[in-house]
Image (cartoon, rainbow, N blue to C red; front, side):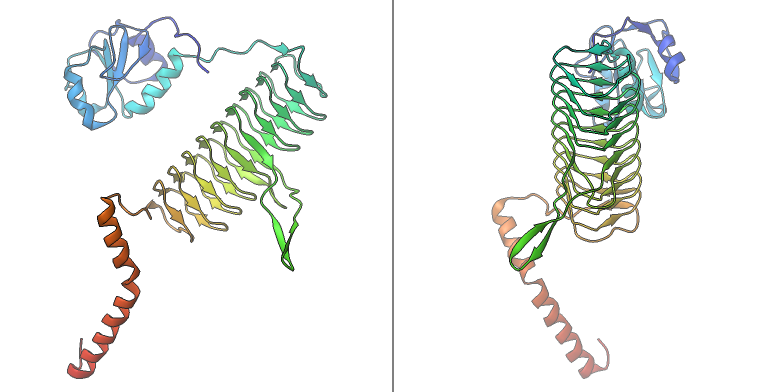
Length: 347
């Protein structure tokens, strides 16, 4: 988590670190980032959504971040950059650096592995045998790392994260509270009305620069590993089933449910509460709208939506009733076309 805001920086100093062109007073001092509506003296605001462009004229910010299209739309000191939203994110990180955890092992922690001196281990942490931590790893209160777990340099596990045996986390991961990585996948074989548990002997392997939101669960593979690629960003309360392969730089919003053996290729975006059936492959660059149900492969990029648009309940009932009869209507149209063709020689 970020700590207190850093010492104020001038626009010139910010641009020297992050790039962009400064217009106006380059020595204006910036302490914090803010929205156009809430900014005050010492803040820098940003315009990333055009519906807020009128606020450029009323903001009390000391400076703003804008795209080249709006470089002349405001008289305030400003940083002009191709992507104001990404620039804001980098500047917010610069002004609000994460306070590093103090190295050392809390007396109330239990560790069965040799750990680097730079690691920070909080109270009531349990670390099993054969665990390998990189430099500067922070494991906060109540976390449990099973035998043979590996965590890469600079990664942070917030309180009460559980990582089952043999799973691997890459460098600079951020894993929020309540995440469970490597629990058994949902695998059972039917046999005469009963269910026989299938041992889940794969792992979860997570790449570098991955962030996983609170209470998300990622199941270990049944045979092969469950894989999460570099740079993925997962929101809160997501379920990822066994043997899934999530490509690089995918984004998955809260409450999405991904069944087993799904493949998301690189740069896929999955909206909140979307559901993806098992053994489906989604092509690189595809965007799944929130609340959508994906039942078959998606083979090319683009936005896909299966949500019925929101409307008044009475209208929804009427439209839903019509949809139920579409198959019969299509059959009737087909029969009429055949009759017309037989009568006139053409449709």
